[in-house]
Length: 500
Image (cartoon, rainbow, N blue to C red; front, side, top):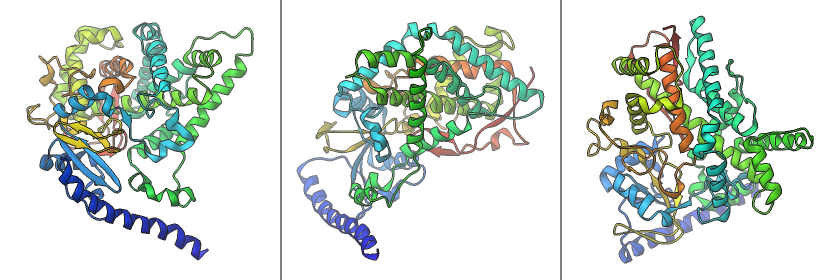
């Protein structure tokens, strides 16, 4: 037994040492022969891992101030190139999109072979990726499909208001992020499966939320094996395991698929939701889509549509509670356009310019995914005079772009008025503001998000007055972040809805 553990640990360590010596030699010779991006000099074995900290988006932004908007680091064995300016982001995501369109896949995404089925991790050149994107565009996120399902989203808004009203009547605070998460969860589950996954009037859906958050945290915080692939020798022998949030979610969705297959055997059954469309497609084209594809696509949709939207609304409400004057201004606009106490419709968004400014300012200061989704180059790529080496991981750090003082006046201040006369938008054409990414790998859920986020926030603001829980002064509100694939509040926002 002692020999077994000695072998398990000593072999990877010996390989790491040999690899480190090789890398030191390779670093010196390679840098002479080609111009690689600048960056901090790596330490033996760990490289620059010690520089990341628990807020990597901020740590890397500070390093970019020293080394430039195209910066190279060595994170363990992995060469990582960090993009930190709007100009360089445009170069990567638009002008050289095809060269940077592959994904850097974390080890956790390889569980259950998830990366081989997921639209989020498949290479953009893969035929299956194109099939999935086409399906989402035509069956879920097209203008016609979204317009046709408007009544469903309005019903979920009514349920959200009903839940807040119940809390208001007893003077109880609402967990804003949790309430929005349940609303988006039920919205998507009804679109996909024609049923709720959480009770809209109770604080339920907690287990699903924890599974989703756990998976997003694990995706955003790589394991040692992601930095040191040589450690897969140990990992494969079971000495390093992670909690299977992803596996549990896939099992849940496979259960929905099997349940629907049984229901479809009834001759009287009729349904036109997304799950039915997916199953029908799999029966017609089994070589293109199978049940694993369906479960994975469902998970991709929940990934993109729940946590991100709830985080944005929670951050927006936090900033408004910290800035009572801005809160009064947007509520006055809502009353003027909608009438006091009325729910907001999606068609109202265009008539509420100040609300739109608040949403954009929230995306600027609190991008849902600070690194978007990591990319990878499959071959050497020339980028603005630098060589990005084959196999490099590429991070687009959108957080410092939103803090760039050359782009934004007083960037640390929450000031929606900066967008008052601006044509900047979040749809991937203006690289000063790219919370959804850009190019061929732009977030497929963008059409739904730009409808729902303003409506969720506007409805909360127009149906209640809001007070911070406890005796906390606005300026003393907690603004700490919890880093993962998405950027959430460390401590959930709790606010008391008051009658108008």
